[in-house]
Length: 405
Image (tube, rainbow, N blue to C red):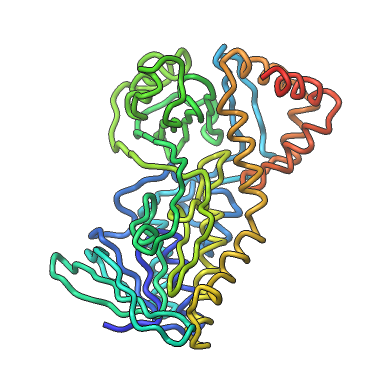
């Protein structure tokens, strides 16, 4: 088989990259190792309105609206943050991902299921204008080869495509766990967030979806008080959350189903392009460090990758010099926001329960909550953080917390 562009991975980033490669004239193939699109699920399914718009998916009745959040301090003190309207939707990722795959196919991309990439070779040098990639695959267990001018690695974390190409992969990866269950929500259009030692280095969540709940958390390896806690798996932390957390245990039905486990990269590699190769989405660490959400940044970057890959093929230049335009463009678009998000994440991850209690106490103020409502943005958290740091009520408290660490 011979294609201009081959995308490895039929998740949202892969399907959007393929769609834009095909739309821009490239003969495009998506390969997916699993038997069906959207499985296994490795996401909470909470997508901002910006993310859905960026994915170019039409809203339907299966999208559950979210208008705000309740944030619980370890002390059980709670603040209510209203979004002032619909800020996000909870979706069934199996259905959502299939819509993206269908859009890619309608744009001209082909797709091969049950096809696993097992290696990459570099083809002949074309006088400094790139090397064709030879992708070794197993199609339903049978060995085969696919020749491609550009391979786009959308194979998640850790990315084998990136490793085979000699590219760095994200070195900070959170461990996540989630279950579906029954939960007594304060408001069926509000998510509930639980920062603190219940989820060392990140936070826990309860997300409503059409009468049920997705209860989960992510943890940062090595974080937590005591060597035993620091080494515990996300699944162990989640079981403890459901059984022992003073709020969650009272509101959660102990019966669970649909266990989801996965990794969440929160930093980006130095380079996301090589001769005849690009990486996108989780494979490239294109994930919001403050929330762990990868749909919006992944979609933004995937569309850039697809177009640049197609343009490079049409120009006959798939060298790293040409394809590095992708690296420059996606970093120009969202790189600063991701960098600020990493700083916010790094600060929040190191707060003790008592410091989080104090922070929630500071934010439990009508003026500050109104500020968060007006300027809060799931995809651009730096805006509201900047506003809070400039506010006379919150600035002093935040500075004290930073300086005392």
